[in-house]
Each structure stands twice: as structure tokens, then as C-alpha cells.
Image (tube, rainbow, N blue to C red; front, side, top):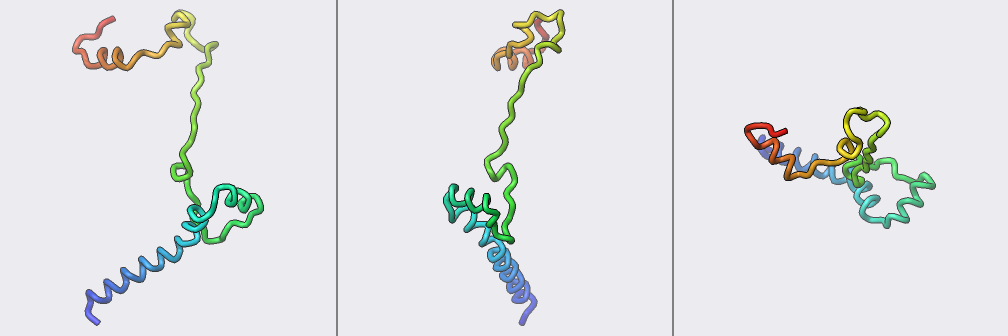
Length: 101
């Protein structure tokens, strides 16, 4: 066997091994309904060789931002402090050469 054939055989072996190790995860996440999977997870009947999906692959996260009004500076009027600048005014003020106040 030549050196290039050994490299191709090794590459083919690695790809085959990766596919065999990923097969339980693919059948678990894509081969079942969400209800069946939730029931199986509740009963702790999860396969051992399962790749755990991170938050980005499970659907992301949800973040809520709140403003603590009591900690605002008293010198700034409340409606002005709580208002959100529009995108057009924010980009116009940052793109102009001289600041306008």
C-alpha cells in the first residue's frame, strides 16, 4: 500500500467513526417527536452516547432587561432617562463631524 492510500484509508476510517458516534444523537434529536423525547428525558431514558447540545443549538436564550428607576440620577427627568433614542437620531449624531447639543 502506498503512502497516499494509507492517508485516504485513515481519513475514511475517521469519518466512519465520527458518523457512528453521532448516529445516536441524530436519531434522538431528529428521529423522535418533541413530546416523546420530553417523556423519555423525564424518565431518564436518555442514551449514554448522546452529544449534549448547547444553548445555541437548542434554541438560544431569552434575556429581559429592566431599568431600576429608583437608581436613576435625580437631576435627569424620568421620561428622558427612560426613553430610547431612535436609530435615525443616534446614527445622525454619531456620523456628524460636530456634536450637536
